[in-house]
Image (cartoon, rainbow, N blue to C red; front, side, top):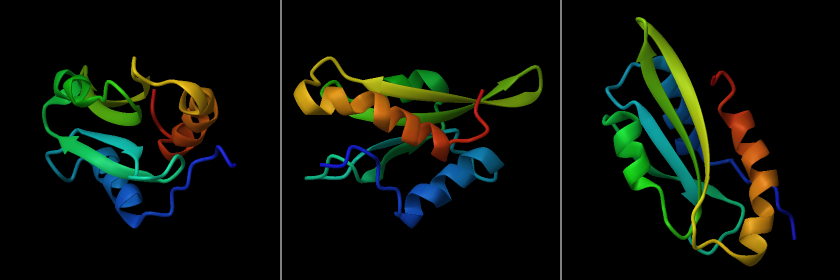
Amino acid sequence: MSMSLETQDEEVYTTIQEIFSGKTPNDYLILTHAPKSETKLQVSAVGEGGLEELVSELPDSGLAFALCRIKADQVNKFVYIAWCGHGVQGIKKAMFPVQSNDAAKLFQGFH
């Protein structure tokens, strides 16, 4: 069983670029596993509410990988969050470090 993430979904790449470019009002995105998959990512949430809203969207019983654009001293900064919910157990928890590294590569340019 491969633990690496599958990221061929065009929506994933498009949404990441929207967050980095700032061309839409959305300032965060959350990627989670697609239904019935331990490795394929899908966009599960996007929004305009910053870190506070992003945190409220993170799953209690799953893994998530998020990117948030914040403004600091008139400069856009990008924050990467790798999330392992309290209810995650077994193989999913073991896969987290590998998948977190894979997801970080998708978000190159974060601080």
